[in-house]
Length: 172
Image 1 (cartoon, helix red, strand yellow):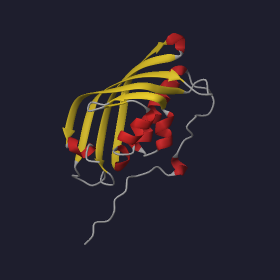
Image 2 (spheres, rainbow, N blue to C red; image 1 turned 120 degrees about the horizontal axis):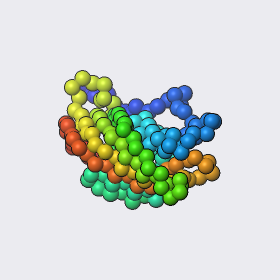
Image 3 (cartoon, rainbow, N blue to C red; image 1 turned 180 degrees about the vertical axis):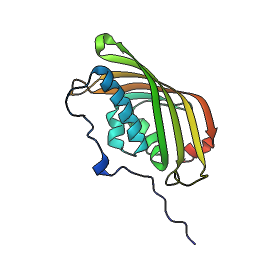
Image 4 (cartoon, rainbow, N blue to C red; image 1 turned 135 degrees about the horizontal axis):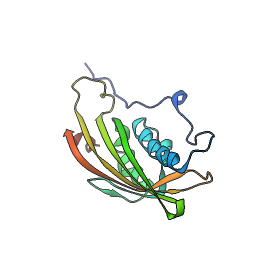
């Protein structure tokens, strides 16, 4: 008997919020947190437009196994090759924001917990998984036509713990 093709879950359009949220205009701190949420929601819902909306074109992403030097490289060597092939859930908490550059920039730290399953297998009891928790370190700046649109220039992940099959996230 052939195994049915399993595809990653993609958020239906009816469930999507706009990339730019409606008025009232958020404070800088709210907009910075929204930027981090756009990144995470883009990961977990396989929404490249939302994911991209959180990253500057020249964004640098330091993963614990490699460093990616631009939004294009992040897509080609991580998002398109690994992330969209997985069922993931990322949780972010303990967000701390330090405004820099007279309010035009920010340094951010946040705790994360992330769970990864092979695409389409996240709801199967006992399925192979890889989970990790740690700290995100980010630098952001204001971008674009919207005064409060923030984007990530730099992101570093510092894992504190891991559990499960790490190869699961590197087999694509």
